[in-house]
Length: 261
Length: 282
Image (cartoon, rainbow over all chains, first blue to last red):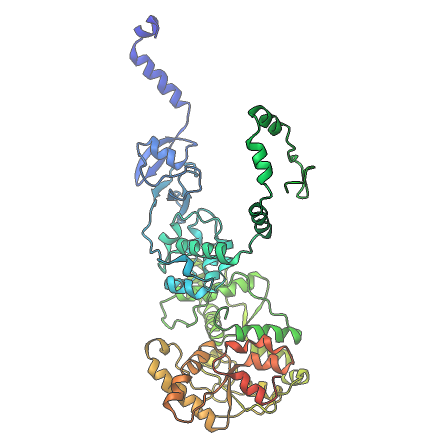
């Protein structure tokens, strides 16, 4: 720090900082009922941190995929309850915010390997499935835009594949369950449906089995040994000169050297 | 229907296609709740059936056909409510503010009504390739096709629709007094012994009037009259069991469709044995 700066009145520095902050527009939001002024453009999560909250739970990936930061809010004058992930949604003036980072939900215990793909097994594990009255509150509460009620309906119909398809984007935030009139645990049911779908229903990739067979039969032993004994320089050279798939290549693109396909 | 009564659904779809009617499943349907709620202030139970009717309307259709008698009963009564009770209609429409408004525009019909009113018994009879002449079956209506009166598909006291249907398939239906008696319905959950006694009344009455099988329309009737037959055989000397057919299975069979479509393996007892004895199955 220079002598000139050292001699400056500390109050001056504070005034300068305040001016910089004031360039960002502050908007009022209500976090659990208390009014705060937070910079416009922040996500709900960052706005809460700006207001002084520290997250030790209810915060995970900050990228919209872990489902830890389920949030409900209301806009002034609107009876509709809105939902969001706090890490994704930016603040709006006068919004009332509350987080529901966790909601107690019944998760059935099962030995997955003992399950077949019969719908009756799901019905037994989650008998409350049939308490659904199609009120659709779950769908309205989904920050992922999933047709939750339709996915539950498909499960009641025994159509596990359709449930897995409809609920593909579920990140298990649990907001559906928090709103359910019939006390269903949609997101755990979906997880079970997706597990069954992935393990028992989806067709196996034939080319994978072929490739595993080829590997086991030693198709790549020779080239691997060759690569292992190569000098670093040669290896780098080989890597740099390798044939790569052009960005515009279609699905039928094949390399010139087909010996390792 | 989709898990427990494929033997009702699959022959129906195949048969109707042969008769020139393509049944199209409602997209995004949900369970109607099966039992119509009688509580006047229990409007939430009306949401599911009404939502199904809205789906029909959304798809640009004005008629919905059910294969299940319970669905018919629940949908038709919910439809009447939406048509006639303005206050409840407003409450329900306002609750479902994400859907289009509904006021009972869709017509609800049972498949038997489509066969009677749109195809006709005579036209049906002309399409029969394998008349069920030798089969002595008694029609069993149960309750939900006929009661309450405002949703009945036929005369409440003296229904003939299943009789006419069987005549069109080439057989003479057996009359018996318990054809419209309730099978006991959901009492099976809390009073299984009563259901067993009920089932025996119905089955033994049909037997004593000369029937060798019952024909029915409802998966719950099928369950109540079918699942306890083994116990009844132990209890009543000489009772050898009675096959139960869904009306759609006999329809497919008479139209000459592949019997595999009828999914007889899902029926109680051994219905195929009887069909073989009557030269209706190879």
